[in-house]
Amino acid sequence: MEVSRTLAERAFADEVRTWLEEHLVGEFADLRGRGGVGQEDVEPKRLLDWERELASGGWLGLDYPSHLGGRDASLSEQVIFHQTYVEARAPGRIPNIGLTLLGPTLVAYGSSEQQERFIPPILAGTEHWCQGYSEPNAGSDLANVSTRARLDGDRWLITGQKIWTSLAQLAQWAFVVCRTDPDAERHHGLSYLLVNMDQPGVEIRPIVQITGGTEFNEVFFDEAETAADMVVGRVGDGWSVAMGTLGFERGASTLGQQTGYRQELDALLELARANGSIDEPVLRQDLVQAWLELEVLRYNQLRMLTALVVDGVPGPEMSIGKLYWASWHRRLGELGMRVRGASAMVGIDPTPPLHDLLGCDYQLDGLQRTFLYSRAHTIYGGSNEVQRNVLGERVLGLSREPR
Image 1 (cartoon, one colour):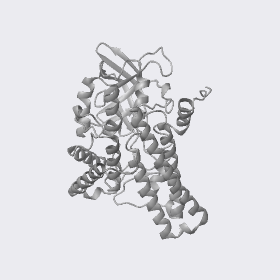
Image 2 (tube, helix red, strand yellow):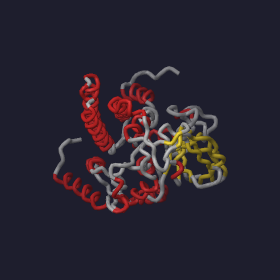
Image 3 (cartoon, rainbow, N blue to C red):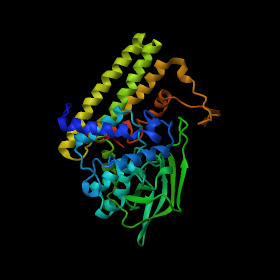
């Protein structure tokens, strides 16, 4: 990836910026700089409305093929969109799991019928998805999945439990990794099924997070049904498809994410100057270290995107980026609490109450949410320990970890 932009790329950035300025008005005007992962300061319905607004401009399908309603945009254009979006302080996107995970998986592994059925409503912002991977005994160790699906005539019957299911309460569909061969072990005998969430046999229970939000959920399947042809890839080959899905999570949006982190760090530096904490030698050194590490993150992401251009699909080296940004953002949250000092321990008393946790009503500010929510970064999407194993075994060629 080149750091500089061509004339055509600068014109594309201007197109994105102009569209955002023209559409962040009216009902969306007050969303600037609000929302985002872990920031429960905007009602999900409003963010879903904004997704449909983006769809009206064709911005949801940048990386999708034109025959499925996408733009066939180049990787450079995708990166520019995400960077320009964040630079414009457009609303933090609600995690659009259908758009970023399921859709690319269907393009790579799905049948033409599955693509034609599911991708158009994803690109229109009218159908939303959740991910059925983790279980109480199969978190980062996805090969330990015990949720089962058995074929009964022309339908699969699914029974089991999934956990940490982001935004399941808003999703119409889920992609669920199930064990379809009860005699197989570990990653063998798994299948990747598409399941309607609005049916008997599906129960969603919210999990109250330390931030007071309920983004995550438990989902229980009790002989929930899906059609026999709702398998992505081959029956029993769900492990390969599931790993491909995780790779798509770490693509063109990563530089936009890094731009958002730059804004967070700049705001923290401004606060440190304002309250004088920047004059503390150790804290000042750690702020400089955070700045340097963010530069390393940026250039590493450029290297990862270069590999994506060459190979066409994300490889195991993408784990470098996940391991790095998750750890960096967690450290930034801790640094923010040190800059804030004792006041970081006190929440806001909202009217009306937005949270009721630990026997009291309170609201968190952005720094407090970042500190608390970033605990999850090093766990979801593959824990730090798993990322190190992937890098050691699949990139460096080291022997497998003893079991």
